[in-house]
Amino acid sequence: MHQFTPQAWVNQSCAIANFWRKSKASGVCILFAAVAAQLWCAGLTSAAESSHPNVIVIMTDDQGYGEFSCHGNPLLETPSIDQLASESVRLTDFHVSPMCTPTRGQLMTGLDAFRNGAINVSSGRTLLRPELKTMANVFRDAGYRTGIFGKWHLGDNYPFRPEDRGFDEALWFPSSHINSVPDFWDNDYFEDTYLHNGERQVYDGYCTDIFFQKAMDWLESTTSDQPSFAYIPLNSAHWPWFVPEKYRQAVQASVDANPEVTKHLSPEKRRNLVSFLAMGSNIDDNVGQLLRFLDDKGLADNTIVVFLTDNGSTMGADYFNAGMRGKKTTLWEGGHRVPCFIRFPNALKAQDVETLSHVQDLLPTLADLSGCEDQLTGELDGESLAPIFRGESDSIDDRMLVINYSRMPTFRVTYTDGNPAIPQKEGACVMWKNWRLLENRMLFDVSQDLHQDHDIAAENSEVVQAMQAHLDQWWDGVKDEVMEPQRVVIGHSAENPMLLTACEWLDVFVDQQVQIRRGVQKNGVWHLVVAEPGTYEFELRRWPRESGLRLSDGCPQLQVTDGTYVAGKALPIHHGRLRVGDGFDQTTDANSEGTCFQFKANLNAGPIELESWMLDSAGNEICGAYYVYVNRID
Image 1 (tube, one colour):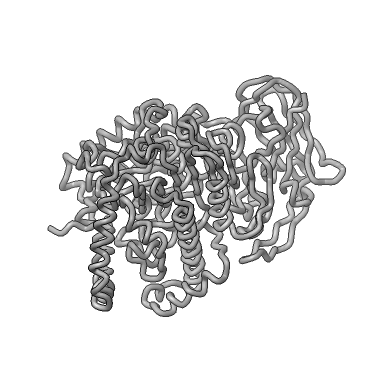
Image 2 (cartoon, rainbow, N blue to C red):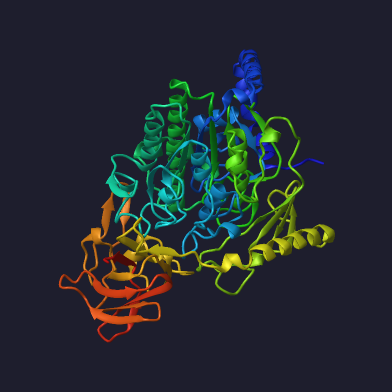
């Protein structure tokens, strides 16, 4: 019986195009055979000759399996990523989390999200357990230089920032996307202000171009033979879909030439799709520049390049999803099955690897390929795939994998009537070979039913029981630890003064600057640790300092480089209240400038909770303080 996979589906879609190419240029076949023979011979090179290679990990945001022309995309050409894929080990059954933070935490630690603490994109549950060793720690301890360029999304404050987690060089922006609540006010992808080694700095150009260029500058800056680990996690193609206009033109022409692909979409959704795909085109250009840089500097053969995406597509289900169902944030296959390409010319031949694999496999795999296995600590959920790549094994040991994550509090789900941000066993997908058990009740065989249209749990009770038993065992091992909130540290010399924002309110979602502009009437609690006893100053604000706005101000609609930010709503804020732990609860009026409420409290070291209130003239609650500046003064 025919086996259906995304790649098989793509191959069928591309058959006519492939025939045309062969008929137009049959002589290419001879050249291809010669090149293939060279690649095969290169693949036989001993790994010993490439001890401690450079490692570059590129992860894009919100692109799915079908967003690349090598996977049959009908609208977008991605020649550079296609080239990389053709030269790589291609993991054809590779999975991540359906949301970005859990994927990033699993990549960094080799552990399931519910073990490493980073389980949500906001709501106080993005923080990676500080005691865990990260991929950056592993490589740095093995003698590597380490750098990050882009989106971290595993904590904005000490001890969770990239510079706290093993990165020597850190160019990044806070939280989930550019223009998130803690990001520099009104950043818009162009000429933005980012964090560079702990200090805000203005950069010229477009975000994706900046992150790739700064990574290449850093790779070139070494004056020794010390190997480098560069992590390039992009914000693109995450909303808002801002992109240099030149990239839209080619995509728009492709959309116009293929009207059947998007004819069912509304004009607004079609425009958004064009921008989304244009961001993909820009990503492809930058991947091409990086590959040429490695060639020009003589680094390509001894550099491992990994390319993956962080979750399923935000747009794929609307136009092309490589035969899969679902999108970002869902447990369907299209929510978490993504591309993963690993190129290492000195040691690996290009090949398809069909073994079921998951993002937490990448840390042990890269440690194995680079000779850094000794730096791994503790028992990991991921396993090295390198023996399969090298032909030493046909497959990894038979195993079941679990995908589970904390949803945003506003999500509607079918497995609980409560707040979906609170972890639940039933919010899982269990994967075993071709089987997918969703929400502990629905079973699908994706080898026969890639689109997951037919629940076959009733006909396969033994399979269901085996997978449910595994989920029960897995849940028993994580259910206590996952409920413990990770705590930001205040008053530590590594980050004092500091900024707390509403994106860390536990199980409350406020993580977009548009929410601040709209004045969302929400409040929440920060879970903190006081590093040192002393006197602390607290400054409660509705707007961040750099905005220059007063507490009760609104702000006008703003035309930015490639879009418009909505007008900011004025709120009748008259008083501010702050509660810190059990010993401090005060209400005050605004400072003389009307920009903030100021408090001073003596605190003991240890865990505390902090809560704030913005009040009207009658003392009624409006919302919490979206921004709280904290400074230990003695």
